[in-house]
Length: 234
Image 1 (tube, rainbow, N blue to C red):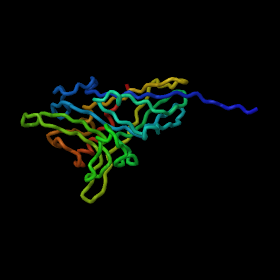
Image 2: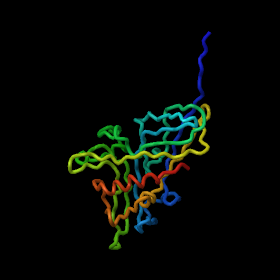
Image 3: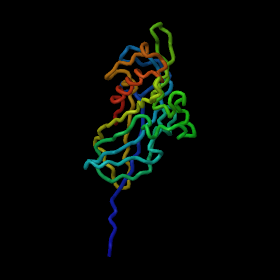
Image 4: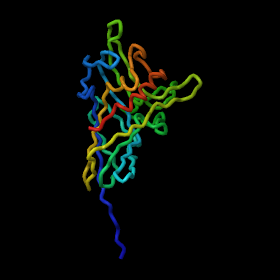
C-alpha cells in the first residue's frame, strides 16, 4: 500500500514600522535632522515591497507569490502595517530575506491597482507610467529659514531620449533565530529608518536636490544607492 509523505509547514507574518535614528517615527512634528543638516518633519510615509524571497538554512529559496507578489505599506493605515501572505512555507530555520524595494519592473504596470490606497501611488503616464515606489512627504527648513514642502518620491525616470530608468532595487537582510514551526506563524519585523535615506553612501541635501525629485535622475540614483542601508529586521 502506498503512503503519502506530508512535510510540515507554517506561515509568515510581516510587521512593518518606520523609525528615525532607531526611534519610532513621530509624524507632523519638526523633530528631525539629517546628515546634511536639514531640519525636517514627515507628514506621510508610503512604499511598496515586492518579490519577497525567504532563504532556508539549507539554501533553498521560497517566494511569496500571493497578493500580486507585492504589498503596500502606509504609516497612516494600520492595516497595511501587517501582511499575512497565503503561502505555507516548509518548517525549519531561515537565514535571510530578500525583496525588491518598490515594484519590480515586471510588476510596475499602470492600472494594475484599481482601488485605493494602492492606486493613489500611480506614477504619471507622461513620466513613464507605473507606480511610485515610495512617497515620503513633509517639510524642511530651507537655507532661507522658511519651512518648505518636500515630496521624496521614488520611481522610474523617463529620459529625454524616451528611455526608462527603473530605480527599484533588491535588498537582502539576515534573519537571526528565524524558525517556522509546524502549523505556526513566524513574525518578521521589517523597519525603515527614514534618516538613512539621506546619508550613506551619498549625502542627500534638500537644499541641493529641492523638494520635488520625480524626474531628477541624480536624486533618484542617490536614493537607490542609499536604500541598501535603510531596512533592518527587528
